[in-house]
Length: 126
Image (cartoon, rainbow, N blue to C red):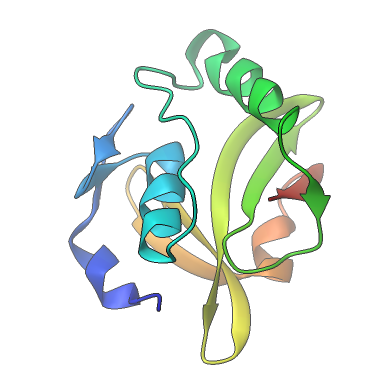
């Protein structure tokens, strides 16, 4: 069961993969662990710099399946044709939200539709 209170102590750290210092990809695996789902590669050291996030996300997608939003699904957010941000779908109070981690705001939970608005394209993967 997902416990949003656990994430109040998280601080954003570029390349962060160890709780409570996470970046946008770090929170994906942390949430997947909490949900009892298989972890994805941790991509240690991978950030948006040099299109690293785009390259590694697209490589991972080759082994995943596109899906509709569902709990535990990874979220790939595009600016143009480049993946620039990722998140993970969670269920709270019977609704689907996206958990994300950003500089300044740390962890936030937004309804799927609101989360998706600022991006050219959003895809869900399992």
